[in-house]
Length: 114
Length: 114
DNA sequence: TCTATAATTCGAAATATGTCGAAGTATGAA
DNA sequence: TTCATACTTCGACATATTTCGAATTATAGA
Image 1 (cartoon, rainbow over the protein chains, first blue to last red):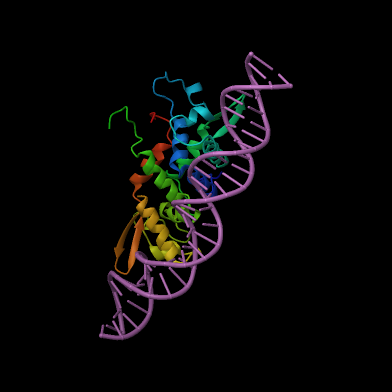
Image 2: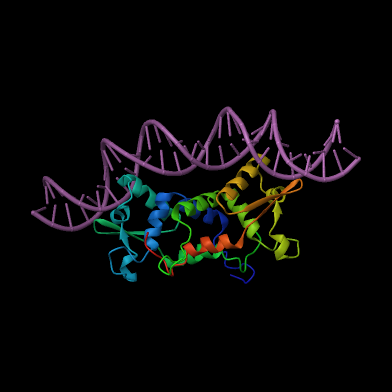
């Protein structure tokens, strides 16, 4: 990536897909849970607290399991979260790199015309 | 704002509205234009280049004027852009503070549970 | 005042999204 | 093998979004 291309690594179409995934309040809430280290009533442990099962993520959000599944699939499709089966459960987490990628869009420094 | 509340200033509902506004490729493109200082073929001037008329913003984007107007209204409603009539034209721009606000959501540092 | 330019508002139509329940798949345990 | 738990897929339906053209408003200039 040359210095002229800047850090706007993700193209606008891809970025729009990510924003669409985050545009639904339920999905944004799910994503936010995965970003949050300090779950209420627990000791904060960065290595493990950022991984949640599908079922855990749905707790407190009043939607059907099928709807929950659909929303997580959308977040995954947009590249915002990772999912991997671990026995009966499916684990979800956010790769820190994606946060950096999206965050860079809102950095005014080093922007280019497009 | 206490140190425990962190810089997640904007609540999730408001944030979801912003992401919805940015989820449409046409709107994201319009917003991106307003973020971009260096318009092709022009000399970069931060003070003025970040202000565009509605008509200028629509150039090169193949949508009807009424659709353009609708999209800008949505961006404005979400709080992402400012609009102000200047004679026959309506000027649009982005307040840098909003970029900082949204960008902070993607900063892992100092996040809180919600 | 009349006309031209810039932009918005208002329906209407096509398409997309969010949601559920029923049925299906994957895994672990008795 | 049988059952229970965790999650997903499918089909259906209600609601929301995108888009346009026609009509309307705002402003500047002849």
